[in-house]
Amino acid sequence: MATRQKLMRAVRAFEFGGPEVLKLQLDVAVPIPKDNQVLIKVHACGVNPVETYIRSGTYSRKPLLPYTPGSDVAGVIEAVGDNASAFKKGDRVFTSSTISGGYAEYALAADHTVYKLPEKLDFKQGAAVGIPYFTAYRALIHSARVKAGESVLVHGASGGVGLAACQIARAYGLKVLGTAGTEEGQKVVLQNGAHEVFNHKEVNYIDKIKTYIGEKGIDVIIEMLANVNLSKDLSLLSQGGRVIVVGNRGTIEINPRDIMIKESSIIGVTLFATTKEEFQQYAAALQAGMEIGWLKPVIGSQYPLEKVAQAHENIIHGSGATGKMILLL
Image (cartoon, rainbow, N blue to C red; front, side):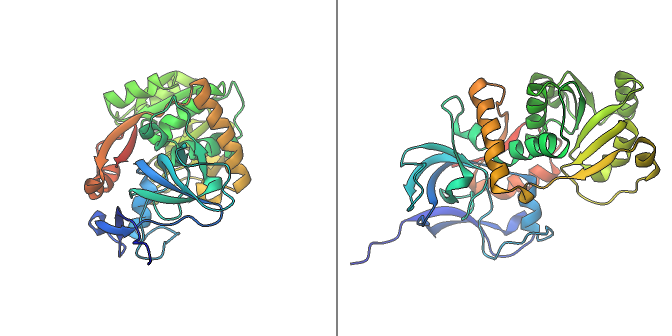
Protein backbone atom coordinates (compact mmCIF):
# COMPACT_ATOMS: atom_id res chain seq x y z
CA MET A 1 0.00 0.00 0.00
CA ALA A 2 1.42 3.39 -0.97
CA THR A 3 2.23 5.71 1.92
CA ARG A 4 0.45 9.06 1.84
CA GLN A 5 2.78 11.93 1.05
CA LYS A 6 3.14 14.46 3.86
CA LEU A 7 1.63 17.88 3.22
CA MET A 8 2.83 21.29 4.35
CA ARG A 9 1.98 24.97 4.34
CA ALA A 10 3.83 26.88 1.63
CA VAL A 11 3.54 30.17 -0.23
CA ARG A 12 2.98 29.74 -3.98
CA ALA A 13 2.89 32.22 -6.85
CA PHE A 14 0.88 31.05 -9.89
CA GLU A 15 1.56 34.24 -11.86
CA PHE A 16 3.95 37.20 -11.79
CA GLY A 17 2.66 40.47 -10.37
CA GLY A 18 2.20 42.46 -7.16
CA PRO A 19 2.45 41.09 -3.60
CA GLU A 20 -1.14 39.79 -3.89
CA VAL A 21 -0.01 36.96 -6.22
CA LEU A 22 1.60 35.25 -3.20
CA LYS A 23 -0.91 32.66 -1.93
CA LEU A 24 -0.53 30.59 1.23
CA GLN A 25 -1.51 27.00 0.49
CA LEU A 26 -2.11 24.37 3.17
CA ASP A 27 -1.79 21.22 1.06
CA VAL A 28 1.56 21.39 -0.74
CA ALA A 29 3.44 18.08 -0.90
CA VAL A 30 6.59 17.94 1.25
CA PRO A 31 9.49 17.37 -1.17
CA ILE A 32 11.70 14.27 -0.89
CA PRO A 33 15.49 14.72 -1.04
CA LYS A 34 17.34 13.00 -3.88
CA ASP A 35 21.10 12.58 -4.38
CA ASN A 36 23.18 15.29 -2.67
CA GLN A 37 20.05 17.00 -1.32
CA VAL A 38 18.70 17.62 2.17
CA LEU A 39 15.22 18.42 3.47
CA ILE A 40 15.10 21.16 6.10
CA LYS A 41 12.30 21.77 8.57
CA VAL A 42 12.17 25.57 8.29
CA HIS A 43 12.02 27.66 11.48
CA ALA A 44 12.64 31.04 9.81
CA CYS A 45 13.18 32.41 6.31
CA GLY A 46 14.74 35.72 5.31
CA VAL A 47 12.90 38.10 2.96
CA ASN A 48 15.14 39.85 0.40
CA PRO A 49 14.33 42.68 -2.05
CA VAL A 50 15.41 40.47 -4.98
CA GLU A 51 12.48 38.13 -4.19
CA THR A 52 10.06 40.98 -4.89
CA TYR A 53 11.72 41.69 -8.27
CA ILE A 54 11.49 38.00 -9.21
CA ARG A 55 7.84 37.86 -8.10
CA SER A 56 6.97 40.92 -10.20
CA GLY A 57 8.37 39.25 -13.33
CA THR A 58 10.75 42.16 -14.05
CA TYR A 59 13.93 40.35 -13.01
CA SER A 60 16.31 38.71 -15.49
CA ARG A 61 15.79 35.32 -13.81
CA LYS A 62 12.24 33.98 -14.02
CA PRO A 63 11.33 30.74 -12.23
CA LEU A 64 8.85 28.32 -13.78
CA LEU A 65 5.34 28.90 -12.45
CA PRO A 66 4.00 28.04 -9.97
CA TYR A 67 6.89 28.51 -7.56
CA THR A 68 7.67 29.15 -3.89
CA PRO A 69 10.00 32.13 -3.25
CA GLY A 70 12.78 32.26 -0.68
CA SER A 71 16.41 31.15 -0.48
CA ASP A 72 17.62 31.99 3.04
CA VAL A 73 16.20 29.46 5.47
CA ALA A 74 17.34 28.34 8.90
CA GLY A 75 16.08 25.21 10.59
CA VAL A 76 16.81 21.58 11.29
CA ILE A 77 17.71 18.75 8.90
CA GLU A 78 14.62 16.53 8.54
CA ALA A 79 15.89 14.05 5.96
CA VAL A 80 19.03 13.44 3.92
CA GLY A 81 19.29 12.14 0.35
CA ASP A 82 21.95 9.73 -0.88
CA ASN A 83 25.54 11.02 -0.78
CA ALA A 84 24.66 14.08 1.35
CA SER A 85 26.94 12.74 4.04
CA ALA A 86 27.97 16.09 5.54
CA PHE A 87 24.62 16.31 7.39
CA LYS A 88 22.39 14.15 9.55
CA LYS A 89 18.82 14.43 10.80
CA GLY A 90 18.62 16.99 13.62
CA ASP A 91 21.55 19.21 12.53
CA ARG A 92 20.94 22.97 12.89
CA VAL A 93 21.61 24.61 9.52
CA PHE A 94 21.15 27.67 7.32
CA THR A 95 21.17 28.01 3.53
CA SER A 96 22.28 30.42 0.81
CA SER A 97 19.88 28.88 -1.70
CA THR A 98 16.99 26.40 -1.88
CA ILE A 99 15.63 24.17 -4.62
CA SER A 100 11.96 24.10 -3.62
CA GLY A 101 11.65 27.61 -2.06
CA GLY A 102 12.02 28.86 1.49
CA TYR A 103 8.60 30.39 2.24
CA ALA A 104 7.39 26.98 3.41
CA GLU A 105 7.40 24.61 6.38
CA TYR A 106 9.95 22.36 4.64
CA ALA A 107 12.58 23.28 2.06
CA LEU A 108 14.74 21.17 -0.20
CA ALA A 109 18.34 22.31 -0.75
CA ALA A 110 21.48 21.01 -2.46
CA ASP A 111 23.92 19.98 0.26
CA HIS A 112 26.66 22.38 -0.97
CA THR A 113 24.34 25.37 -0.29
CA VAL A 114 23.70 24.28 3.32
CA TYR A 115 25.92 25.24 6.26
CA LYS A 116 26.04 24.33 9.96
CA LEU A 117 24.46 27.01 12.17
CA PRO A 118 26.58 27.62 15.28
CA GLU A 119 24.76 27.43 18.64
CA LYS A 120 25.59 31.13 19.18
CA LEU A 121 22.97 32.12 16.59
CA ASP A 122 19.24 31.45 16.80
CA PHE A 123 17.15 30.45 13.77
CA LYS A 124 16.03 34.03 13.05
CA GLN A 125 19.66 35.10 12.86
CA GLY A 126 20.47 32.04 10.76
CA ALA A 127 17.79 33.09 8.25
CA ALA A 128 19.42 36.54 8.05
CA VAL A 129 22.83 35.27 6.90
CA GLY A 130 22.35 33.90 3.33
CA ILE A 131 21.89 36.57 0.68
CA PRO A 132 22.86 39.58 2.89
CA TYR A 133 26.21 38.31 4.17
CA PHE A 134 27.30 36.41 1.06
CA THR A 135 26.44 39.49 -1.06
CA ALA A 136 28.25 41.89 1.29
CA TYR A 137 31.30 39.62 1.40
CA ARG A 138 31.36 39.30 -2.41
CA ALA A 139 30.98 43.08 -2.80
CA LEU A 140 33.79 43.97 -0.40
CA ILE A 141 36.32 41.16 -0.76
CA HIS A 142 35.81 39.81 -4.30
CA SER A 143 34.63 42.88 -6.23
CA ALA A 144 36.14 45.87 -4.37
CA ARG A 145 39.23 43.90 -3.23
CA VAL A 146 39.35 46.03 -0.09
CA LYS A 147 42.57 46.40 1.88
CA ALA A 148 42.86 47.04 5.61
CA GLY A 149 43.16 50.78 6.26
CA GLU A 150 40.98 51.80 3.28
CA SER A 151 37.77 53.76 3.80
CA VAL A 152 34.34 52.41 2.85
CA LEU A 153 30.96 54.13 2.70
CA VAL A 154 27.98 51.80 2.98
CA HIS A 155 25.31 53.88 1.23
CA GLY A 156 22.11 52.51 2.78
CA ALA A 157 23.63 50.71 5.75
CA SER A 158 20.69 49.87 8.01
CA GLY A 159 19.15 46.97 6.06
CA GLY A 160 20.27 43.33 5.87
CA VAL A 161 23.08 43.73 3.31
CA GLY A 162 24.14 47.13 4.70
CA LEU A 163 24.64 45.93 8.27
CA ALA A 164 26.43 42.81 6.99
CA ALA A 165 28.77 45.07 5.00
CA CYS A 166 29.47 47.23 8.07
CA GLN A 167 30.31 44.20 10.22
CA ILE A 168 32.55 42.59 7.58
CA ALA A 169 34.32 45.87 6.73
CA ARG A 170 35.06 46.62 10.38
CA ALA A 171 36.33 43.07 10.99
CA TYR A 172 38.66 43.41 7.99
CA GLY A 173 40.22 46.64 9.29
CA LEU A 174 38.49 49.29 7.18
CA LYS A 175 37.41 52.79 8.16
CA VAL A 176 33.62 52.39 7.96
CA LEU A 177 31.07 55.12 7.20
CA GLY A 178 27.37 54.39 6.82
CA THR A 179 24.13 56.16 5.96
CA ALA A 180 20.59 55.54 7.20
CA GLY A 181 17.29 57.40 6.90
CA THR A 182 15.96 57.13 10.46
CA GLU A 183 17.32 57.82 13.93
CA GLU A 184 16.88 54.18 14.87
CA GLY A 185 18.67 53.09 11.70
CA GLN A 186 21.60 55.41 12.39
CA LYS A 187 21.94 54.02 15.92
CA VAL A 188 21.97 50.42 14.68
CA VAL A 189 24.58 51.23 12.01
CA LEU A 190 26.92 52.67 14.67
CA GLN A 191 26.36 49.62 16.88
CA ASN A 192 27.37 47.28 14.03
CA GLY A 193 30.77 48.46 12.92
CA ALA A 194 30.45 51.98 11.49
CA HIS A 195 32.82 54.64 12.83
CA GLU A 196 30.48 57.40 11.66
CA VAL A 197 26.91 57.58 10.31
CA PHE A 198 25.07 60.17 8.21
CA ASN A 199 21.35 60.72 7.58
CA HIS A 200 20.72 60.32 3.83
CA LYS A 201 17.37 62.11 4.17
CA GLU A 202 19.14 65.37 5.06
CA VAL A 203 19.53 67.68 2.06
CA ASN A 204 23.24 68.40 2.69
CA TYR A 205 24.42 65.00 3.91
CA ILE A 206 26.85 64.58 0.97
CA ASP A 207 28.58 67.83 1.99
CA LYS A 208 28.83 66.54 5.55
CA ILE A 209 30.48 63.31 4.28
CA LYS A 210 32.93 65.37 2.15
CA THR A 211 33.85 67.50 5.19
CA TYR A 212 34.34 64.40 7.31
CA ILE A 213 36.58 62.53 4.84
CA GLY A 214 38.57 65.53 3.58
CA GLU A 215 40.46 65.92 0.30
CA LYS A 216 41.34 62.28 -0.30
CA GLY A 217 37.80 60.98 -0.78
CA ILE A 218 36.40 57.51 -0.12
CA ASP A 219 38.12 54.39 -1.44
CA VAL A 220 35.07 52.13 -1.73
CA ILE A 221 31.32 52.80 -1.77
CA ILE A 222 28.87 49.92 -1.34
CA GLU A 223 25.75 51.25 -3.09
CA MET A 224 22.25 49.95 -2.25
CA LEU A 225 20.18 52.37 -4.40
CA ALA A 226 22.25 53.28 -7.44
CA ASN A 227 19.40 54.91 -9.39
CA VAL A 228 19.27 57.64 -6.70
CA ASN A 229 22.85 57.85 -5.48
CA LEU A 230 25.34 56.90 -8.21
CA SER A 231 26.10 60.43 -9.39
CA LYS A 232 26.70 61.58 -5.79
CA ASP A 233 28.91 58.54 -5.19
CA LEU A 234 31.23 59.48 -8.05
CA SER A 235 31.83 62.91 -6.47
CA LEU A 236 32.85 61.26 -3.17
CA LEU A 237 35.41 58.78 -4.51
CA SER A 238 39.17 58.92 -4.03
CA GLN A 239 41.66 58.58 -6.89
CA GLY A 240 41.16 54.99 -8.14
CA GLY A 241 38.10 54.59 -5.92
CA ARG A 242 35.36 52.07 -6.71
CA VAL A 243 31.58 52.07 -6.41
CA ILE A 244 30.14 48.60 -5.96
CA VAL A 245 26.50 48.52 -7.09
CA VAL A 246 24.56 46.06 -4.94
CA GLY A 247 21.04 47.49 -5.35
CA ASN A 248 19.22 49.45 -8.04
CA ARG A 249 15.58 50.24 -8.83
CA GLY A 250 15.65 52.36 -11.98
CA THR A 251 17.82 54.53 -14.24
CA ILE A 252 20.09 57.51 -13.54
CA GLU A 253 22.12 60.00 -15.54
CA ILE A 254 25.81 60.31 -14.66
CA ASN A 255 28.72 62.32 -16.06
CA PRO A 256 31.42 59.87 -17.23
CA ARG A 257 34.02 62.65 -16.79
CA ASP A 258 33.70 62.05 -13.03
CA ILE A 259 35.09 58.55 -13.60
CA MET A 260 37.82 59.68 -16.00
CA ILE A 261 39.35 62.34 -13.75
CA LYS A 262 39.72 59.96 -10.81
CA GLU A 263 40.23 56.79 -12.86
CA SER A 264 37.51 55.33 -10.69
CA SER A 265 35.36 52.26 -11.37
CA ILE A 266 31.71 51.27 -11.15
CA ILE A 267 31.39 47.54 -10.54
CA GLY A 268 28.15 45.56 -10.44
CA VAL A 269 27.57 42.64 -8.09
CA THR A 270 25.12 39.76 -8.27
CA LEU A 271 25.25 36.76 -5.99
CA PHE A 272 23.88 34.62 -8.84
CA ALA A 273 27.29 34.86 -10.57
CA THR A 274 29.07 33.29 -7.57
CA THR A 275 30.67 29.89 -8.24
CA LYS A 276 30.37 26.86 -5.97
CA GLU A 277 34.03 27.28 -4.95
CA GLU A 278 33.51 30.97 -4.13
CA PHE A 279 30.49 30.12 -1.97
CA GLN A 280 32.63 27.63 -0.01
CA GLN A 281 35.34 30.26 0.45
CA TYR A 282 32.87 32.94 1.61
CA ALA A 283 31.17 30.45 3.93
CA ALA A 284 34.49 29.63 5.61
CA ALA A 285 35.11 33.33 6.32
CA LEU A 286 31.55 33.95 7.50
CA GLN A 287 31.45 30.89 9.76
CA ALA A 288 34.68 32.11 11.36
CA GLY A 289 32.91 35.44 11.93
CA MET A 290 30.03 33.66 13.67
CA GLU A 291 32.39 31.68 15.90
CA ILE A 292 34.54 34.70 16.82
CA GLY A 293 31.46 36.90 17.27
CA TRP A 294 31.80 39.75 14.77
CA LEU A 295 29.05 38.30 12.54
CA LYS A 296 25.82 38.99 14.42
CA PRO A 297 22.73 39.47 12.25
CA VAL A 298 20.32 42.18 13.39
CA ILE A 299 16.69 41.13 13.06
CA GLY A 300 14.19 43.73 11.86
CA SER A 301 10.48 43.20 11.22
CA GLN A 302 9.05 39.70 11.59
CA TYR A 303 5.98 38.28 9.86
CA PRO A 304 4.05 35.01 10.04
CA LEU A 305 3.72 33.12 6.72
CA GLU A 306 0.10 34.39 6.40
CA LYS A 307 1.38 37.99 6.14
CA VAL A 308 3.88 37.34 3.34
CA ALA A 309 2.18 39.81 0.93
CA GLN A 310 2.48 42.54 3.58
CA ALA A 311 6.17 41.68 4.05
CA HIS A 312 6.78 42.06 0.29
CA GLU A 313 4.93 45.38 0.27
CA ASN A 314 6.88 46.74 3.25
CA ILE A 315 10.39 45.70 2.18
CA ILE A 316 10.06 47.92 -0.90
CA HIS A 317 7.75 50.70 0.29
CA GLY A 318 8.56 50.82 4.03
CA SER A 319 10.02 53.95 5.61
CA GLY A 320 13.60 52.65 5.82
CA ALA A 321 14.83 49.27 6.96
CA THR A 322 16.47 48.53 10.26
CA GLY A 323 17.81 45.00 10.31
CA LYS A 324 16.74 41.95 8.37
CA MET A 325 13.14 41.11 7.53
CA ILE A 326 12.17 37.56 8.53
CA LEU A 327 9.24 35.18 8.00
CA LEU A 328 8.58 32.97 11.02
CA LEU A 329 7.21 29.45 10.70
